[in-house]
Length: 134
Image (cartoon, rainbow, N blue to C red):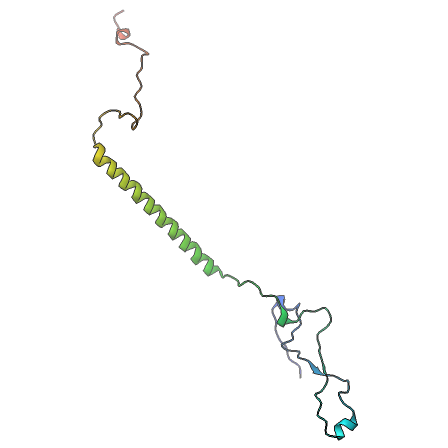
């Protein structure tokens, strides 16, 4: 009987011990005298695994692969969290601005020491220097 058993490329380096189980050996497991006397001995088995090849059953466990759809969903969720944080920060800043306007007033009342920028006085040109009559 011949058959084809497809395997993934990364599994071809392992011995397929799930397919090629130990088989009866050509070696004799008991002599004729023992058989005639009624002894029941299990047959000698031979392992078909070549030397130096790791059986598939002893293959190291690989990390589960993440699909592109899962990566995309995770990126969307992270973006949504970041957007939510940005909206919350904006709302806090807006509430602070509204609170300040309630206590500071809306109209300009000049510079408030320590809060608004200081006004600078300029002494570059005096009003009398602008006479055109000369």
